[in-house]
Image (cartoon, rainbow, N blue to C red; front, side):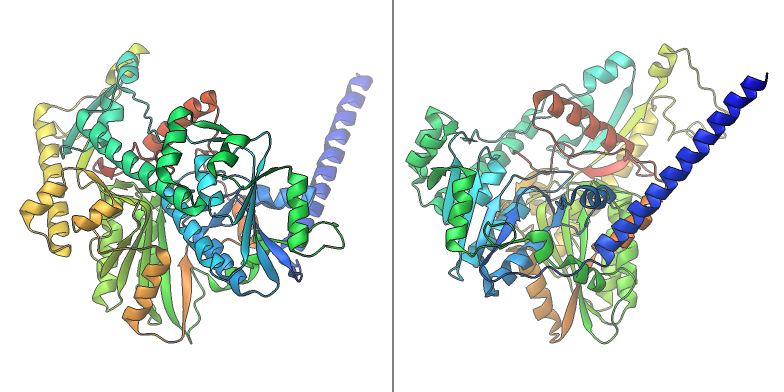
Length: 614
């Protein structure tokens, strides 16, 4: 008995000591993190440096900043590669480098790590445009790649001097949009799905009700892919100064190009090792005394994010300056207050716009949209607040990113001007209702529902039973009314007659170039074009551009780390066959879990992915 108590006391002592050591280690780790990020000195750019644009990032539209794991990685390994940069901070850094006498040129390396709605084609095109402007300064852009993705190569193609690893390959295989269909799975496991919809081309419900694309949906997706691939080939042919038809002939003979193939075609300038590439940069730039390699400044240091966080705040707005606000809507629009780059709550965006409307210093609002749509209720909440701030005399200008379709187009309606890229996917003017029921699935496991109600349809929002024909008719009438309102908004705000609107609606999706011809947008241009137009519209002289959401600084991240949240995590995309299959299922589960419109009504493009076609 005595030895038993001894063993117990030993275990308690070991547990207490282990806990104490863990707490002590955590304290020192926390202190190291704070010291590293809050008290970190500015990095000085050496004379003759190259700005290193490492594409190993997720390039988003909206500001996001670092995550907690990024902070710990830097503290423990001294490696600082934040996975998220937002478009505007990157393009502004490139513009700054063009006039920085200490910066000799730009070095591009690495490959994108897309996540959520980041690395969309529209954002990549705006990045390339910023690099084109940089070259006008007379400074050079050099790049080194081994096995780039097609999106990576679009950026690499702008280089003045492009080096390729001798063992590398370049695959230019064209574009495809693959969709996983769940109709048979639902049927097998007893999940019922009833659908009401409007729009001949509204293929949003097909993944839940069919085993393949409808002819109408296949037609529009094919059109979008053809336009995108044409634009891609035009871009790299122009950037590399090679004949497009010759490039097409080469690709017809084989899409997998070796280093020698790329040299012959003009897709690269030199075949070399990475070591030789570093020597070339050293030759063009200056030597770093510590590393003995070329003097460099990394993008994370050059964006000066630590300072920018002081200017970009949801709470603190300087009273003495006029403000041009840039509000980002990125991800599927849902109800609520979420904003994580995958889903964005209509209530969250509406709340931000309401706060801006109360501030007399806010003179203009740019809404940057990168969203395939989503909840009718969430989209309406955003549109209502945009209309209110516009009534107060604040110009509202829309900048469409890679996609602004369905609900993403709905929220664009009450605006002074709509800008979109040539490759922006927009339109999809249609509505659907998705009504699931789990009755048979539950019965397969011996589960039964019972209900007491005051009306035959009191449990209409329940998943315990299918809906009757009369109930479906009532819901269909509701969907029809939303669609009629959509048509009215488009007709009124785009100055189009009802016949014209109905013809270009029907849930059909349009590329930016076609949307301009159809009158769905006003002008082709990017985010900076929209900001410049807003400034000219307001007539302000001294102003500050504030972005919402703010870029998170280190203290924000540490604070959020201690918040308890329950949320499905969608990790960065992987390229292997198995990885892609599991990623598709995870994305489907995430999407279904965020279908939270109180009336089960949606404007959505579920077959769209952030890198549509790539």
